[in-house]
Image (cartoon, rainbow, N blue to C red):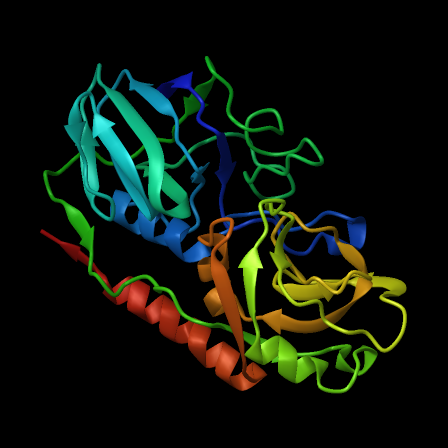
Length: 309
């Protein structure tokens, strides 16, 4: 199946669960900013959880379907319509042949995921179909969707008339971002770690998939912010010389040269992915053991939260 892109939207890319394991070659993992929403959209559409889908930021594309297709939209709440008929997020829907799916602006949240049964079937690069725009790899020619592009979709089972829907509590809602202190908390002045976990920050409009920049009261360093470059992970909270934190995203560099005060746990990264500019964020300290348990709980809630109707 081929889907025509009549209009690409503000910033729409193809993402899956990313390409981990290539950091030693300087390649970040990429993949969905909100991994749970990607998994949810795929489960609703009848795909494997990690199938490639569209990550839609702020406002979405207009797509033309020349064959029947089962689609699902999860994550941020968008104004979405098939021709002039509104569709609900968090529910699978049949898009009939010859119709147009329009995804407008996000009403709540920032990023949505459109999964199409069969998955978007661009060629994998280093084991993933995810787009890394900064390196020009993956997705459609290494970049965001453009007007007039075409999307190949893999084969799938015929539509059986059944609808899948998400329960209300299947995806995480607004909450504090749990983070593990360190690894360089000694690089900060006394009391700064406590301030990080007690103060509020706002999301900067300069944020992107490489990092969510935060504004607020500057964190106080006890020495230089720079250190010898070392491997970093998605969720690491770097603090440059201005004292304003940057939470690294999936398109982050493979190495970083700023001290890190904490690391946001994987279970709460979806909350960060949906934060809009000027939204307020707070952090809460946690442990590695609790982080692992939280991720298992998130996956269990998602997989138990999909029901057929």
